[in-house]
Image (cartoon, rainbow, N blue to C red; front, side, top):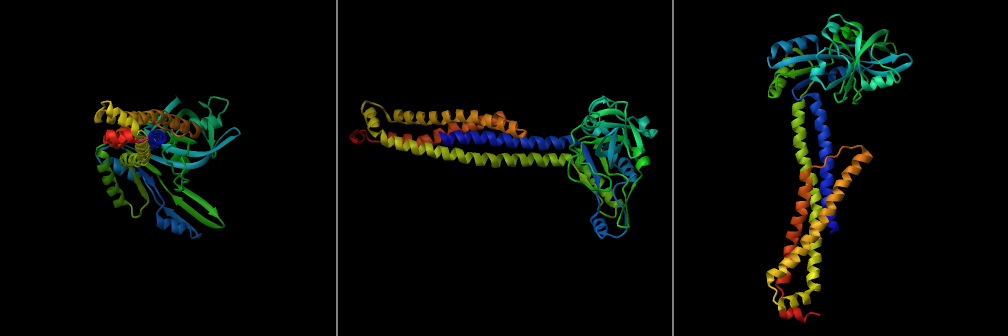
Length: 401
């Protein structure tokens, strides 16, 4: 029974952990938008070699406002194009200071990204048109800068400019943001502050200048990201090819990358199926071992109970009665082990989720699958010992001591 118990437990637990990991990955991709195409500015390899030389250099790369206009005007299946300009800066309020990202964008940004408004309002067309010094901050940043007061209608300082807080949003932090200059630490940044794109262009310009050891370095990036929303999901893959062709025509170097969440989602779903097959196969080995153990025990039982079988046959029991007797015993062992295994298989993922904060999802089909396999194991591995017992000659069986 131990083999069946741990086999069933491992099937349910491993599938629950795999399902939870897959669900989290797919949710992160879904939050990027299944109808979105994301284009990031990246520093070309040849420019990286230039900057590593240590001498004076000045480079210009990445997406431009003209790119955004061309994409919007050229491809009819596009619903809207939302540009982003991202600058890494310190954000201050009174004596509190946090490192974060200033994201210049348009009022339509919440429509294409997973952004839930908690309080106040988001940016308006009037804010964008008049280059107003207003901002919307994330909930995490609000907790850090304003631990004891309502941040709405207060001001935060970025460099020498003050921005009035008009709204608070809850952001998942799944979309990887790139700071000015194209550097990226690979971590999701939740300390985001959203300002009108026109204000970001006016206040911060488009050139980042750094000086070190007497050298003069400058990078010019107009836009760090374009989020393109298509009119429907079927148009996404065709739109991705059209956008790539258009950008390649106007860019002489590889200074952009395209991310298609819909394609990533399909790949994640395919990976999930393969992952479940692998996990199920590994766990099925435990059930196989448990079944072999039951079969061996029952074969030994047949040998030990040879005289009992002979007496039953002599009293009129038929072969099918002997087969039924031993088959029921093996099925009871398997189902009993399966029930205990199901209980443990449900408790293990709950414990994993509690102690590790990893999401686990127990699906009904995994429980039914594991329990069904345990019952099938009893039938398959119980038939052979039962048939061996039924084949015993009653007279020879009665002679056994």
